[in-house]
Every structure is written in structure tokens, then in C-alpha cells.
Amino acid sequence: STQMSSDDDSRSGGSEESGEPDMNNLSNPDIMSKYRTAGDFANYALEQVIAACKPGSKVLDLCKIGDAAIIQKTDTVFTKPVLIDGEKHKVEKGIGFPTCVSVNHVLGNFSPRESEKEVVLQEGDVAKIELGVHLDGYVAISTHTVVVGQQEVTGRKADLLLAAQKTLEASLRLIKPGTKSSELIDIVKKVGAAYGVTPVEGIAINSMRRFVIEASKHCPIAPRPEEKLDPFEIEENDVYSLEFAFSTGEAGKCSDKDGNTTVYRRAVDVSYMLKLKAARQLLTEINIASPSLPFSFRAMEAKLGATAKLGLREVLEHQLLHPYPVLTDKKGEFVATYKCTCLVTAGGMIKVTGLEYPKCVSDKTIQDEKIVKLLNTPIKSSKSKNKKKKTTKKSAQ
Image (tube, rainbow, N blue to C red; front, side):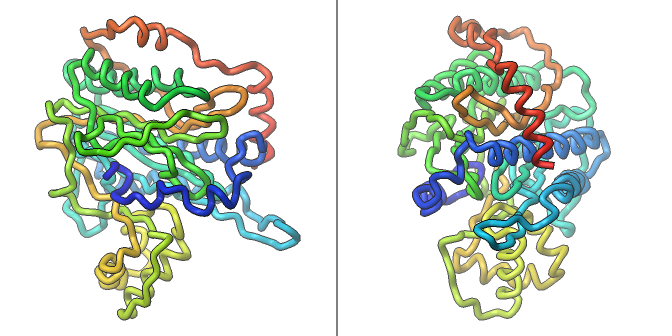
């Protein structure tokens, strides 16, 4: 299973890929604008959560801050129905991935329910904040790691954060048509070794398309021995969620055995006549609120109360939802991860999510000449593009 979820059907391509070739055409300014605006909103929400990540903050409150910021922003755009082939359609928008705040040895997908035991941040905690925004199904997703209460990160935690940051930065410079997925994995190994940390199994680089956050291209950053690899080449019009995670643990293995699950996604290809009224109510609510993208179970409980919990078992029994289990390393270890959304356009790579990294000081450095050279290369962005950027952004508003 990848961190994102434990299924494979969503990566098989599906009808959208063949049936709607133009739905992900990045030369269409309308689509481009939706991705960029979703990215701006994701960065805004991330900033709100980071600002609230202080010693004493409750993880539940932080997750609510992120989700509320996403809704606040997406409520400002596409407020009127749009005309498609002469018919009015409401534009779907909102949370593309619910806010998760995963601390220390917890890798991801931690978005607690109200009833769960409180997790309170402490000075020095390594907190991973993950969230996503979608506008009309175009998803911008991001994960950012901070060390709570520290302006400057040092020691093992600095090595850990730097490995994830440098891997992402070097990889971004290779995101162009023709690059092979194996070239990205090569960077992961070398940077991890330079900082003395281990890439985490179960994390992957995924291609995305409209309404699908794990599309057909999928590349684990630390393949398990038994994992069947499906190498790919990057092509123009691709959209990727690029994620790199490292652990201070030697194995780099994260499991879902002690974590529970609070984030799910509707398994769009499965249907079943549910018997329990509560289960039917829950499924109806999911189909309305989050028909294809991940959601937090807390959001369902907020709408349906006890009915949500009552109906969950039967819905899960018939595999109507894909779980995103909470993934954990060994207690005492630390895990860091950075993820951004990037678009491969005719004019180059465009990164739509991601914030400035925390300041990290380490005595370790990358020696590999090729990677050092990559990191010293500026990411290309032509002047004319920037001008265009501003105008398309306005039109999205």
C-alpha cells in the first residue's frame, strides 16, 4: 500500500483517462488556472496550520483549522453555476485531501475524530501537515514538515528534514518530458545516504488527473523487495504529486498495524445494496459530499452524528470505501516528508504547492556531483509565463 491508500484500481487508468483526453490538457488556460488557484489555496491553508503549530496545540484543532481554511478559500470562487453544453452545472470544489497532522514516528493520514484521545504538540515534535484542495476536480496537494517551537533545526532532525527537502528540490529539477522514474529513485538513495537517514517504504510519486489523486503512473520511492515495479517516463501534460519521506530508523518501514483509520475515499467502481439504514445514510452523505476524493470521517460525524459510526461497519465490509490508514514507524524514531504538486507543461515544470522550508543546520553535505549540480540549477520560469500567470489567476476569481 502506498501512504495514500491501499488499493490499486485507481491506478489502472479507468475510463476518465481514455474517455476525457482533454480534461487534463494543461495548455488549456482554464484548467491551468484551476490548478494554480487550488495550489494558492492549499498554500494558504498550510500557512494557517503552520502558524498554529505551537507547543500545547491540539492536533484535532490544527486539522480543523486546515479544513476550515480550505473551505473559506474555495467558497470565494465558482460561486455561480457554469454553462456546459447549454446546461447549468454547479462546480464541485473544496477539500481534495483532508488536513492531517502526523507527529514524530507517525508518517501520515492522522486526522483524529472528536472522540479520540487528545494528541498535544510539544516543543521539538516533528509535525507533518498534509492537505489538498480541489477546484472542479483539479487537485493541488501538499505536505510540509516543521519542528514545533524551533526557529532553527539542528542535529538528527535537521539531517532528516534536509534529506527530504533536498530530494524534492533535486527531483523538481528533473521533472521534464523524457525523465525516467528510475532517475528520481536514484536521487532518493544518494541523498538519504548523504544525510544518514532511510527512505520510507510505502511512499510513492503518483501521477494525478481530474478527480483522481492516484492515477496510472506510480513509483514507490523505496520499493519493497516483493513490489512489482512499473517504471514510467514523464510526459508533457502530466501532473504529479511528488513526495519524499525519510526516517531516522534503519528499516524505513512504516506499518498501519497500530494506527486506526479516519481518512477514506469512496471506491467509485463498487456498489452494493446496503441493509442498514444508517449505512445507507452514510453512503448517501459520502456520495454527495465526497463522491471521489478523500475525506475525514470526522466530517461525516459532524453531519450525521452517531449514525455515521453506526453505518461505517457495513459500508467497509462491502469495500465501498478505500481506507487511508494511519502509518507509523517505531516509537522513538522520527519521520519527515515533503510533498508538492507539479505540472509538466510545454513551457517547463510548474510547482503549484509548497512553502519555504524551515531553517536546518547540519554538518552533513551531499557529495554526489550530479546532485550538487542539479541543486545549483535554478528552476526555469520564463518572464512571459509570469505575466500570463497573473491574468489567468484573476480570471479564476
